[in-house]
Every structure is written in structure tokens, then in C-alpha cells.
Length: 475
Image (cartoon, one colour):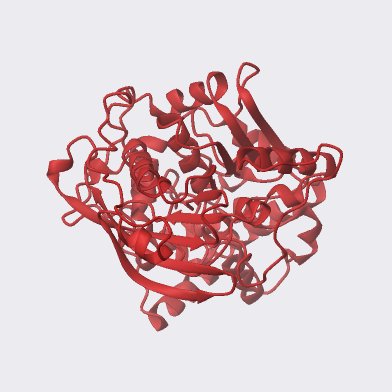
């Protein structure tokens, strides 16, 4: 999967953030009328609105790829429906269930998130609305909001809870971690616990000093200096880089209409290279960064490995328009531009969500919308059973969620030296044990307080590969 630019993660306009109690998200969710001892596929397909796409073989489980019929507008279900893809990795109805979303496309290959690995549970995964094929036709983009998406999750939980009636945990990484947070804010009684990984908290939409301070201190000075120097050198060789980009695009049928030109596409990718390095690499890997006297071919390839030149093309931008639409209308996104590139940057202000959304989709940020401030305030003051995991050197952790002292059963753990791939396994030993105990408690599982808690499954190289949505997108 090609790497994406930082702005490739968007959330949308929240409609009536505060009218949670009057929402009709659960309307029309009927109960499945089927023998509780029947085949699990029959029980799932007895849920009204559920249909099977395919069942895939997987050792130790049954894996179902499904469509679930959802209202386009949960506040007005009569306005039409669309089919939303979900998957179920079924272990046993007597086990806990993990509700995973990456916040983007659905991974159609069987996989286990970390909480699923720890608890030996079932896993329900959801494709985020408006990512194809889970998109209404015609698409009313005003219905792409965090509340509407949370309501999608709520209806899925309502529909499946009658089958999977043990404890539920919501989880996800990056935008999926944001999604899990928003879901709990709007439907706090659905889940027994929520475990967001590396979830950005874009609450200070007009204030970006946290990101500037982060890049002044991240990692070692030696690595920071090396990265800054090679990024600047790549810009100094723009006249050599852009022709290579144009040749590659022509050979592979890529275009630059949304960016505006190949030169602008070069700048979109080039200005994010330092960010991209810290997102996916460690300080200890800095010896892989080329020197400023490396050949142009070497620098071009390194930039492609870190940022992906395809990220500046129409072909990579269009599929992720739903994220960028949300980032530009409701979620917000860091307005960070590397100051050391000021003398070589030609298009200041280009790297914004609007650049990554087709121009025929109307898009305007509602400055009066209090959605992100509402989420931040709720996490600080009223949240419960929330476990946040961050990486110390992850740029997206510069503005984290912070449950306050009056919240219940909440914690934030930071993995030293880790990036956007941080998880419970990368925490220091004491934190790892504490976090694992929290997950087990959320899942309703007994843990001996006198013993170090361990995952209840053995590692499976097919099922336990990292989720691409969490690792390769920004965020």
C-alpha cells in the first residue's frame, strides 16, 4: 500500500453535536429471530439488513465479510439507506468481542487487533462510511460526520449484541482511535471499555505550537539535523526531482490535477518527509537516512520510501477524499509547515485538506462548530474505561487526548522512543502489565493480581500482522 500524505485523514461536519439524547440511531434495528444454538452464520444472517458477501477460511475461527444496511441519515432514516461493509472474525459467543475500525477502508483479510490477541475474543470490524464501497449513491457529503459514523457503529453493536452478549471493547489506531473515542462519547453505554491507539486530538484548530515544539525536540539532535538537511537538499534539487516524478507518472498513468501540477505534487510530498520519517521510523534507524551529497537517484528513492511520490497524485488522493473532507470540515488537522523550508518552498498553504478533495464536493469548515472541543472536554471530565496508547516520537501524539483526574478507570501510556506504530507490546514492562490488566478487565476476564498478565492467544503470523490503516496513513 502506498504511503499517504499527512492530510490523508479527514473527518466531517458534525450535525447537532449536543442533541445526543434525541438521536434515532437505533431506530429500525430489529432482533434476529433464530435459534440461539443454530449455526453462527445463520444467526448472523438472521439480523435484519445483514447480507453475506463471502465466508473465508481461517484456522481456529470463522470469518464473514458482510454488508449491513444503514440509514444515510440516522436522524431521518426515511431518507434512504446504503450498504456498509463489516467483517466478523468469530471465535465463540462465550468470548468477549472487540469492535475494531481503522477509520478508513475495511481490511477484507482476516486479522486480529491487539485487544483481540490479548483477550482471545471475537472481532467485529467496520468500514467507515463514505469509503467505497460503503458510500450512499448519490453521496450527500453533509452526512459524513463523526456523529453519523458513531451511529453506524451503535446500530451494528445493537444488531450483534444479541448474538455476542459478553463484554465488548472498542478499539482502533490513528483515525480509528479517534473513531473509537467519538463512538464512546456519543454512546458511552455501548462498550465495556475503549482502547484507542495513537489517536490525534485536533482540538486547538487555530493553534499549532505543539507540533513546532515537537519537531524541535523529537529524537536525537544528530538525527534531527540529518533529516532537516536531507529534506532541504531534496528541495534544492527540485529541478532534478520533478522531471523524475513526471517521467514516473507518465509511465504509470498517474496525474496531478488535484495538486495542480507535478511541481506542486513534489512539494506536497517533499515537505512532509521529516514528519513521515518520525511517524514510521525510530531514532535508531537514522543511519538509513542518506547524506546531502548522495546522488539524486538515491535521494529520490529515499523520499519515495518515506513519503511515497504517489501521494501527490489524483489516483492516491481521490480514494481518501472522505478523510480529507472530514479534516477540512469538522476534525481539523495540523497546520504545520516546516520552517526550515521557508527559503525553498514555492507554495505556502498548499498542504491543506481542500487540496485532497475533488472540487465538485462542497467543503467549508464550520468555525462555530464545537465538535472537537466537545470531545476533548468530555474525555477530560466525563470519560470512563478509556485506555490511550501513544508513541513518544510520533508527531500525531503532539496533541494527545488527556483524561482528567475525575474520570473513572482511564489511563494514558506512552511507549518510549516509539512512533505511530506504538502499542501495548512496546510499553515498558510495568506499563505493559498495567495496560494489559485494564484490557482484561474491560473484557470481563479474571486476572490474577499476583501474576504478570499475558495474552491469551499465541502469535499467528497471518492474523497478527499490523493493520495498514493504522501504520501507513497520516494519521
